[in-house]
Image (tube, rainbow, N blue to C red; front, side, top):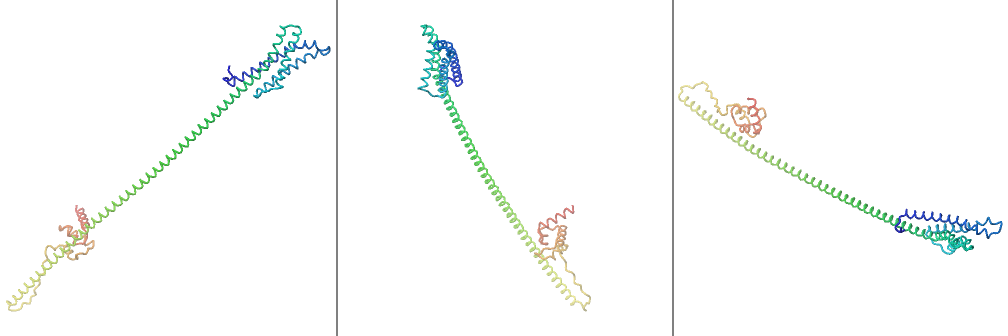
Length: 353
């Protein structure tokens, strides 16, 4: 399996396997060295100190353990050590090999040499390979961490970009909404102003039409009143003329009657032997039937152009309705309008019904 394609969990699992295997090999190599090196050291150790023979094997093996443990720690830190650490690693490794094969070599047992060299050589190889593996693992973890950091940075950048885009979209939407509100407000304001102008124009038009209608009605009413006044004046003039002609005829008749009476009196005086003392009564002048009614008497009392009192006018209206006179003549006689005279005629008709 390529370390460049392994995940972090797989790499950590491989590191645990490497550490466990290394310590297992180291434990077995130390145990094997105790049983191999101790008899050799005992043979070359003075009597009374043979119990210290195990110490040499432990010294070499502990030094080798220190080297392996420090190499592991340094490798995890991503560093490389050279100089004395490398010398210590090779020294302890070769010492362990020599001590393990020493007894077989002294005996000339090549098979024993080969067999006893396996454990220390494997331990030396593990001590050399372990740092390389750990360095590769550290590099892979660093790569993964960098990739993760780059991924997180890319995600943060995408998040910021998305937030910026969303913020820009929100601001754009807010700006669009604001512009729409302003457009709507402007349209509402223009519509209200237009409605107000139309209402004002409509009010002005209505007022102008009403004013024109009032002026027209007033003009018509004035024209009607002028016509009624003209008719009333004509009637009054005609009635005054008729009265004047009537008076003139009456005076002429009275003059004729007086002249006739004087003539008859003169004839009587000429023919009578003696003057007659009888009192001659002067006959009352005849009154034309056209003015014998109460209406004409009241009309004769009225002066042209003067308005009667309401009671007298009502009496004249009643008499005129009974005599069959026209409303225009009654209006001319009384000085009241034809509308008022027509209303009185209507009241009399309703009362008669």
